[in-house]
Length: 257
Ligand SMILES: [Zn+2]
Image: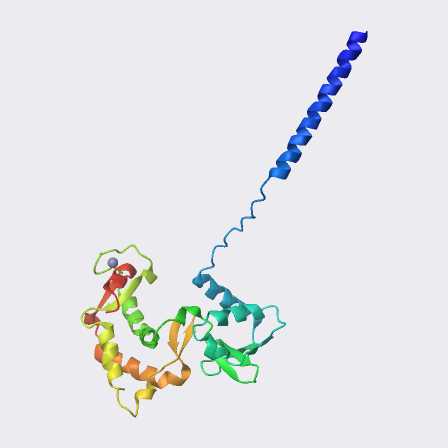
């Protein structure tokens, strides 16, 4: 009987000791643990395309009106202007508020106005895609888009669309571009711009543009220039024999010719 009790007691002590040891070990481990600095997962930087998309949606959502500092969306515009390559001259004395305004000139889009602390106002392009484009690039894009209906007409007349270079005929309609075979577009553009190369009319060449769904377009005030250009292009260069169909990839390989 005594033997059994002793056994039980020993057993209990052993178990208690074991628990104690485990607890001590745990404590030791805890004390010795080097607190690794919490790894902050580097946030994947949001792409420019996504930023442009978000901004377009935000402007559309907010609609016209003033965005004061207390506004929950103020920071989006604040960060946007910080990224702008000409932010210093745009911000000037300081930001009082932003304003989304209807663009009466183009009557197509909303524009962003920065209202400075001294009450002065400045319009700025919110579309980051256009910030680093040179004036020539924007002008070229607007000129290309202006004559788009002419090439679309040619494209529509085709019975089947096939790329003249790679002979691919399996692509979707939008993947086929109309290209000037002999005379590169840049030469037609330059020839037209040369007509404006006189002191008195040089200022008629547009310097600022609208964007609509990612397309660079002439502003309403430059519709005269645009009309003249379309006329010039269509009369002198709208020859079906000078057109050819290229697929998007062959056209981009050909470059801005
Ligand atoms: Zn091709």
